[in-house]
Image (tube, rainbow, N blue to C red):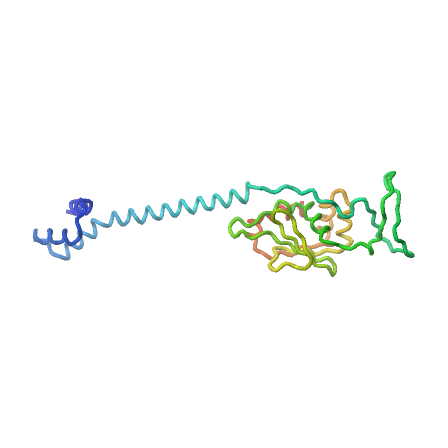
Length: 235
């Protein structure tokens, strides 16, 4: 009888029509409702299962796109930024007397020499150093679209760098930064003067002269690709 009811439903008959037909055959109303419930159960289960399966597949596709974007897609490339201290020698000692411009011989060439006290850390310093550290590999969060934001506190100077199509550094701290670097002017200048700035800054970080404060969760940092930058500091 359940099978016949299913066939009737497939044929387009309404519940009331089926109820009247079964009542005409002597079936009690409560039994008819039980038969209708059993006849419809398979359809309800099938619809529920199909809907759940589609949602699950959509979820897997969504996760797959996110994982692929995070782990395998890297559209950035290292930028060709000019070193603000290129061609300059910095004297870390104390300056005796007033010297406007002094030139010293380095590798058979004369280069400008300045004292560390005369060096002013600018936004160009921060962008150049971040580029050397590998910040160009960072990317916006593939889910929220939020771009990486990094703060630098160097003595009494405050800077914020946003990594999007490039590295844009401005004075002052960011509103909602991901990480904060703490360092000293001498540490930044030493890194800038080196042919391998990342290695010098890494040594400063690992020796405790520079430090890093994480503001966001590991999941957020992972989405933005920070672990590559963090590994470059620890390697």
